[in-house]
Amino acid sequence: MMSPELEKQLIEKYPKLFSSKQFWGFECGDGWYDLLDYLCGAIKQYTYDSDDLTVDQVKEKFGRLRFYLSREDDVLHGMVSMAEYMSGRICETCGHRGKTRDGSWFVTLCDKHHEERIGKIVE
Image (cartoon, rainbow, N blue to C red; front, side, top):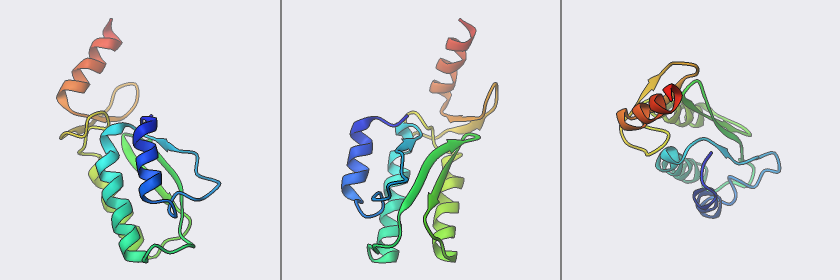
């Protein structure tokens, strides 16, 4: 899960996007913070900080980001799809270059965090 400090930063930076009562928080690691910040900034700029667009859910699934909006058009869909695709190449733990790996579940990690995870599983 994302650290409370980073969650707070995103929510304070994009208060309208994260104003939905349905939003439960960020169910992904700190490594995707910059990707989420960039995506939210692009959405805010495109929608001119619209009051009727909110984020419903942010999570990891099958090693990739899942980002659900209250509404979408083709441009918003493209932005979200690109971020979701890029998350498969960014370590969810630290934000460095990573790749999606499978094992008992899919996860996107850099070599260092992958080896740490393998070590914890083996021990």
